[in-house]
Image (cartoon, rainbow, N blue to C red; front, side, top):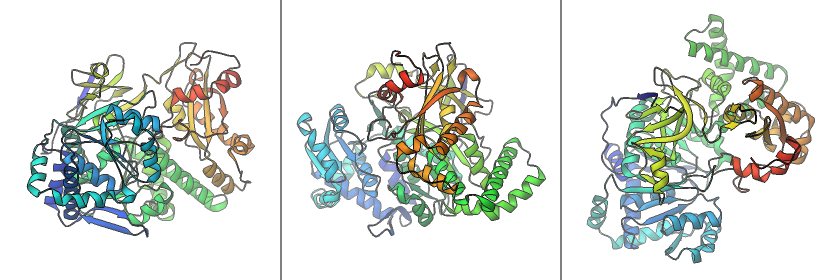
Length: 605
C-alpha cells in the first residue's frame, strides 16, 4: 500500500454480541422511550416504546420457531420500508436465520435467481402483487415452502403461532447465535453486472453500528435524537441505519412514500437527515423555483451566493466581515425558511450513495445544514467513512470510522480493512479471493488520503473512460454537475475507446415544468416535447458548459443527446439505489450512440 490511515478507537464500545443484542441493550437502557415511529392509515404518527418493540420481536421470533424455522435458514423479505420490515428483520436474525432482502421492484427472473442462490425457504411479501411475482417462480424453486403476505395478516399469524413456543425455547435459540454466524445475504444492486450475494455476519454489523455511534456522538447520542428513514430497507445502508439508531439514542421514524417526504419531515421533525444527493438537489431547486423571478428571485439568488461564499470562507478559516453580516441577515430572511423544509429541528445531513456536487454542499453548509458526505459499500455493511460534525471538509468523503483503516494501493485503488468487512461472496470463492486480500477489501474506487486522514474519490477503476486518444476520464464529476440542473434527471457520460467524450441526458418532466413555470415559460406535456423545447435545451447546454469548465478540453463533453425517455428501475436502466446501469444503457441506446453521436457504426463500447 502506498498510503494508509486508521482512525483509532477512542470510545469504549464492545465488539461482541449479535444484531439482536444491539436492540436488547438499547431497550435495557431506555425501555419506555420512543424507539420506532411510523404513520398509521390515517397519516398520524404512532410509536413503539423500546419495551413494546422488543416484545413484538420476541413474538415474531417465537412464531418463526413454531413454523419450523431453524438456525441457518434463509428467509426473504420483499416489501417497502416499514416497522414490519424492521421487526421481521431482527426477529429472523435473532434466532440465527438469515434475512435475504429482495427489492419489490425486482423482476421474476431476479427473484428466482436470489431465492435459489440463497436457498430461501420462506418469503415475506407486502401485498398481492408481490405475492404473484413470487408465485410465478415457485416451480423454479422447489425449496421454497411458504409465502407470507403482510397485508393479509402475516404479522398476526406469527403472533398467533408464538403461543406454541416458550420463553425458554426462544432464549435457547437466541443463545445459540454467535457474532461469527452469518446474519444476512445482501445482493448487490448490479449496476455493472449480475448481482452477487454478500455474506455479512452479526459481528460485521455490531462492529460498524457501535463504531458509527461512537464516531458521530453529536448525531447518535443524547436526548431528542431523531432520524426519518425513507430509503428502501432492501439496501444495506438503510438496514445499517436501523442498527446505528439502536446502538445510539436515536428514535427511528419509518416512511416509504417519497411523494409525502417533505410533509413527513415537517411533522416528524428529524434532528438529522440521511439521503442521496438527488434529494438535496431537489430541495435546492424547489427553493429556487419557489422564489421565482422579480425581487424574491433576486433575494434568493443573492442569499444563495452569500451562503456559498460564507461556506468557502468557513472551510478556508476566514470569513470576510461583510459576508458575515450579510449571512446573518439572510439567515432570518431566507435560510431559516429552507431549513423549515426539513422540520425545523435538523442539525446535520449525511449524504451518500453517489458523488455530491460541491456547489450544493456549500449552499446547504452556508444556510446552516452541513452535508456530511460519507462512503461505503455493501461489503462493509454500508458505511466506512464519513465527515465529522466538527472540522468536516467539503469535497471529501470524510475520515474512517473508529477502528476502520483505509489505504491507497499502488494503482490508486482505495482499500478498506476492519471487522466490518464481509465474510465473502455467496457461492463465489474465486471472487472473494480476488476482492479481499490479507483482510483488505479492494473497493474498485480510485482515491487519495490527506495527512489528516480525509479521503477523496477521484474515479472508479471499472468506470474509468479511456478515449481513443488515450485520455483517462472519470465520468462521475461531469455527471454530478450536469445533474444539478433542475430539468435534468440523469446523465451518463460515455466515450470509452471513442474519439471524444459524450453524454446521454434524460429530463425530469415534473421538475422541468416547475422550472419553466417559475421562469414564466409555457409548460410541456410530454418528454418528447421536453427534449425539443428550446428553453430546456438551452438550460441543458448551460449546465453541460458548466461541467466542461471543470475539466480539460480532452475530458469535456463534446456532444450529447437528450433522450425522450427516462432511466428507471422498471425499465431496467437504474438500480434500486438509483445508480445508472452504464452497460445496459449503452446497449439499449447503441443506435443513438453510434449513429447520432459518433456518426459511424462502431462496435459497442
